[in-house]
Length: 209
Image 1 (cartoon, one colour):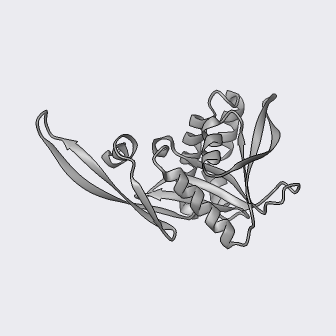
Image 2 (cartoon, one colour):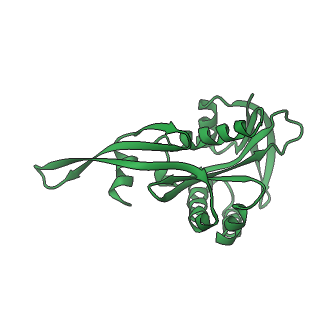
Image 3 (spheres, one colour):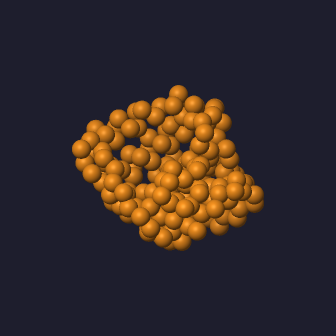
């Protein structure tokens, strides 16, 4: 892990200001030269939420693997989780960049730190027109405000495409995600079930009108 990433994760929570689809974040990094000396260096990182390109496929595949292992270990049975991750390799994601769903990436200083997929709501019984199908960050980029940035850009894009209302599904046992969507104004509106290797897991539908 680079010192910039360590600073983002362990030191200061950066103040992030979005300008269109591009944001910049500044954080103070302390370099410890000795027991008595420290040097303060200011670093500015480029943070960009953009549409994924075919050349991003390998990096998205890696972000997907790491985020799903971190998020779903102990929730989804190991065999089912491994199969789901392996199914989405580099070629799968390359095709996804040209697919019907919009695929966004969160680019932090040239590293794909996360991704989101979005499009039309798939649940016909719900009146909300837009849906964020997936939103995940690599573990080392979580908890520093980048998820909020990616979520906000995904919502703005759906709105710009004419979608009224939004729905996001997450597994009930994924408490981190559920709390994230509640904190960002989502209302627990509906429930469903997902089957993973004969294990039934409840999912929650959060809506924004």
